[in-house]
Amino acid sequence: MAEKWIRIDSIEWIKTDVAQNYSIGISIINGRKVCIVKTGEELHAVQNSCPHAGGNLSHGWMEENMLICPIHRHKYNLLTGRGAEQQGDCLKTYELKQTDEGVFIKFTRSFLNPFNWFK
Image 1: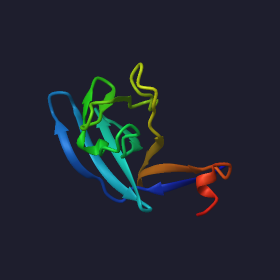
Image 2: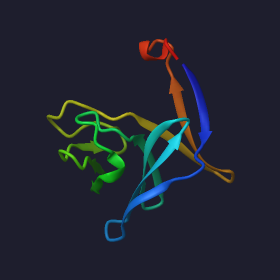
Image 3: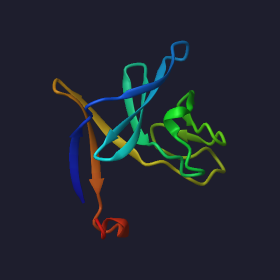
């Protein structure tokens, strides 16, 4: 697998909930939409499209450590990407790191994935 760290140049913050201490935004990185969630001082990144119905997760909200899709209210664990019990789906999560130069996201590309064969 090939790994690549890419600097996140900008995040468009869409929702902030001061009472629950989180913000949800979106960043477009190499043409890929990524949902960015800030909980306290921690940043998390997941795919922006809900695997259930394609909703924009960046327009959702948080309940505890679960990211909620705004369309059918499917819930996803922000740390693992797993859907709530009995959902049977999961999100792609991305590793982030913060340095003096900014915030970086790690994209991993598997050459065994057939979707990568035609890129």
